[in-house]
Length: 231
Figure 1 (tube, rainbow, N blue to C red):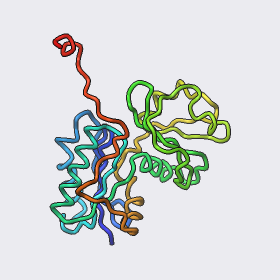
Figure 2 (figure 1 turned 45 degrees about the vertical axis):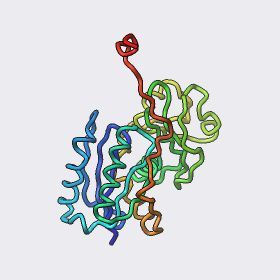
Figure 3 (figure 1 turned 120 degrees about the horizontal axis):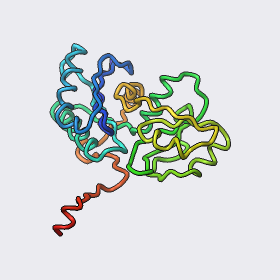
Figure 4 (figure 1 turned 135 degrees about the vertical axis):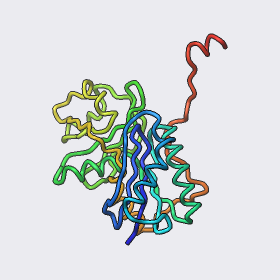
C-alpha cells in the first residue's frame, strides 16, 4: 500500500495530490501567478489531512521535475527535498511532459495518435516532446521554436494532439489537418499517480542531496529598460 505525496509546480498551476497504489485519494490545486511560495505547503498539509494520514505514514515524495518555470520548479523541488529529509522518505522525480501525456491518455482511453505536450517558454518557444500512445518517447524533450514546418515529418504520417499552455499559441502556426489541440489542464498532480507507483515499485529513487530540477535552459535575469538606462 504505497502512499505517495505528489507535487507539481512546473507551470502557473500549484498542484498537490496523494495516491495509494497508483490511485489518487486526495488533491488540491489552484492556478495563478506567484502562488507556489505562499500556498504549496498549505496545499500539502490540506491534502495529507484530507486523506486521513499523518506525514510519517507517507512512503515517498514525488516531484514533477520539469522542464518549466525556473521559480516554480525551484520551490517545488526545495519543498520536496525538505520533506524527504525531515521524514526520511525517498524522492521520486517524474518528467513534467511525460506526466502531461499520461494525463491526456487517462482522459482519452483508446486514443491512437501521437501526443505532443507543450509548456510555454515565451514568444514562439515551447518545451516539448512527442510520445506515442504507450508513452514511448519518440522525440526527446527540447526547447523548440515553433514555425509552420515544425513536426512536419510526424504530421505527414499520423495525427498529433498538442496539449498544454504552450499549445494554444501554436495553433495558428501548426495548421496541418493532422494537428489537433487540447488546452485542458494536464499539469495536475493526480496525473503522476500511476507513474509514481510504477517508479516506487522499481525503487527508482533520486539522490536527495544532489537532485536538481530539469530546467532545460539556463535561468537568465533580464533588466527593465529603467535598470538598463541606469547602467
